Image (cartoon, rainbow, N blue to C red; front, side):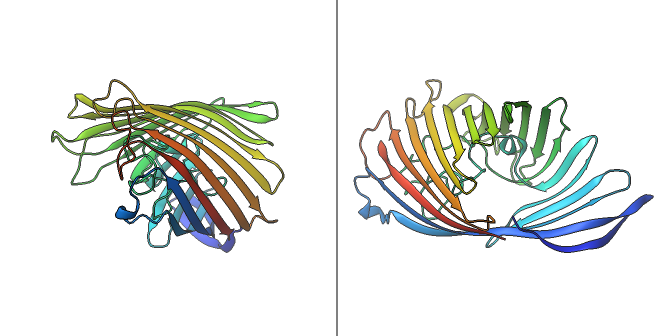
Length: 354
């Protein structure tokens, strides 16, 4: 990604610490997406479904960093979208590790092996819906909201404090805490561990992550949510291959388990050439018998991807196509917004980096 150097002469005085030069840069990307999907919904017309949508994405990064004479590195970054700032953080790093404060992805999400946020082909998981995002909604012909269609767990990027250890023989640990705010007790605690080692000219990694979102209040309907993942990933000149197991458990009022989902995800991204990538992802999710709602519901999907980027990696074009199947154990019909459902979803994305 090209970077525009703004200045290298900003001086920072930190008490007795010597002055240092700060590097400030701007980079980003802009994207256009076209989405189309079809499914078994028995009455899409009455719901106003269009089965196609367009969307645009803008990401503008401003980053700055400086190193003191004592070896400490101070840095900060902000990512601006079309209408909001969705990432904004400061950090200090040294031999002790890295402390980051601000709005950013939490520890578990940042250490996930899934394709939730990597977006190597045409953004993250392909979904439908009018916004062009990956999350399924009741009008996109996917999961009806009863079974997660990704293994991302808690994907929020709230204001939080995070600590990352230095690599200790290949082992890196992360921990973060996000306060829910003054009107809720929905605090989030997130931890992750990743061990990596060189193997066969590439890197083999194992991870374990979990995060807990506390109940918003003490009301009967309030619920705690716990997400977890463990898996393996191998990266090399060929691309990347991975497999993970993930869980999501929701407990209402501290006792009743309303949701207990478990699933697997595996995938491979293959570098055909320096400019062409192919991708395949398989997902399987189900609602376990320990849950009180939607027991036996299942979701599966096969996703195929293709990406071509022009020399210099300034312009990219990518396509993701998904075949999905959702089984509602208690409602086999394909009624609008309820019941079992299956179909396809396709996303085309044109992207420019700058």
